[in-house]
Amino acid sequence: MSGNSEHTPGDDGLAWRDERDFVDADRGFIARLEPAVVRGEDGRVVWDADAYGFLDQDCPATAHPSLWRQSRLVARQGLYEVVPGIYQVRGLDLSNITFVEGEHGVVVIDPLISSEVAAAALALYREHRGERPVSAVIYTHSHVDHFGGVRGVVDPAEVAAGRVPVIAPAGFLEHAASENVFTGTAMARRAAYMYGAALPKGPDGQIGCGLGQTTSTGSVGLIAPTVDIGRTGQEEIVDEVRMVFQLTPGTEAPAEMNFHFPDLGVLCVAENACHTLHNVLTLRGALVRDPSAWARYLTETIRLFADDTDVVFASHHWPTWGRERAIGFLEEQRDVYAYLHDQSVRLINSGHTGAEIAEELSLPPALARAWHARGYYGSLSHNTKAVYQRYMGWFDGNPAHLWQHPPVEAAHRYVEFMGGADAVVAKARTSYEAGDLRWVAEVLGHVLFARPDHTEARALQADTFELLGHGSECGPWRNFYLMGAAELRGGVLGTPTRTAPDVLAALTAEQIFRSMAVRVNGPRAARAGRLLLRWEFSDTGEVWSLLLSNGALTPMRGDAPRSEEPTVVLRLARTTLNAVLGGTTTFADEMAGGGVVFDGDAHALVTFGSLLDAPDPDFAIVTP
Image (cartoon, rainbow, N blue to C red; front, side, top):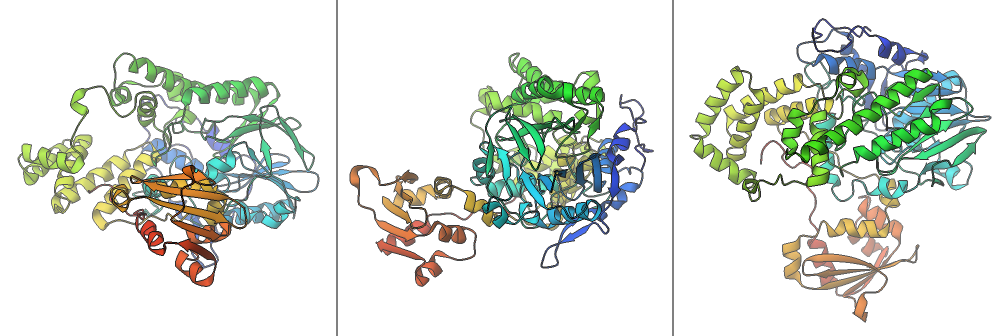
């Protein structure tokens, strides 16, 4: 598979004839999974790498040549040798799974998203390297594509018995369990746009997301860590494999770590250095990351390990071999995050807004030419806006933007000012034919928020989104545009949002009750008056009080202050609450069967339940 394309730009400064990434991506290849289709127990396809076979073609007019090149690289799948004793399976999920051979077994690093694909990867490894037992599992950080498939590689009973340690950075469990709890529905809905998993795979549709191809859709699990890495320099030896760890909190994830194999001269950099510019703020939604801290930790990585490192590998993409190349890769990755942070802040202090910075800022030539610094996953445009958001928030300082109408109300006024929906669409078509697609998308957005049923506007906006997507170098931008086009043409495609039972079980009681608090319908709750619910968990011995007052729900450990008598007392096992939250039972069924016992005002309990709004996993995005 060549890295060249007949559609490559002629004068963009990129080294299109440089084949080193393709050589590295193929280096150490042992075997593919054949066929590369993984199914769940019910027969449903949860991963299909073969669907990306079309990438063997030359880049079509419907894709950005640079993103097409990246997708060709990322779509490679199979078992690869990094060095003797370290192996990776790539291309079976958004992330990589790594196997480090010990004296008796194998240490598994980052077991993908789903148990089905993780099991398939382990089987492929064992087919070619022997039936080694799993001697340990390492989670590099707290994102689901690095722990969700753990049940596919290890039996929880083995972990509980102390035979298989699970190693993770300090704070992992809290962040892994809570990241998507409060705004999980909204994040999942937007993730459907970001990864485009529901889009057809093909030159006109989903070709990847820059970080990987897409996300697997199998069974997600979580086994709690048994060994915490609490400090940089901490050394652990598992199955005669020696590792030295570096904590990097607040970089690509709130709990993350790099680690070095000093006996092998190999460095794992988790997701802190990949073959793409990463996200400072992911488009699905998250807390804004700190690119300045990210750069500082990479400087520390170089200082700690560079002199003893011959190979760098990560939890995505392919390794970098050779000490000088590895150091250069880490330095350029460091520099790109430092540059986008520092230059964005410099422009902020010159009075520029986020949107202005995004238009003005470009990388210096050496970084702009580096393939691994291209914006395949996190674009320079939306990353600079994220830096602005981190420091300055949503307001750009212009009082004209302080109290604007919400989208629907503003849309009606814009459309009226511009002569009505039909007139705006006619003018937009002229701009479309002139190639001003960004403007077309903006003005038709107003039409669709004022007249979501306007057939011509929907069709033209879908065509506009499609062209914008086909021209995007950033994978998530392409997927967002193409998902918008698909839903304008065919309606909402749906969003799976159910949280895995293992993740729910890992939540603390406080996290569960705080997640209830953000579901309380405040206006209705304010009218309901004051309620006090006491929760007594028989299996953990915990007692919690939930006070509903003035429309706000306040969780408190133990008894409520002022010795207030509870309106309702509920006695149940924490595991019962997990089952209710996981959807395998209901409060009504558990009360009828004795799993939940309560004392007090039954009507108040019904009232409390009625005040919790159910999130909408299918809310509209491109229309009101």
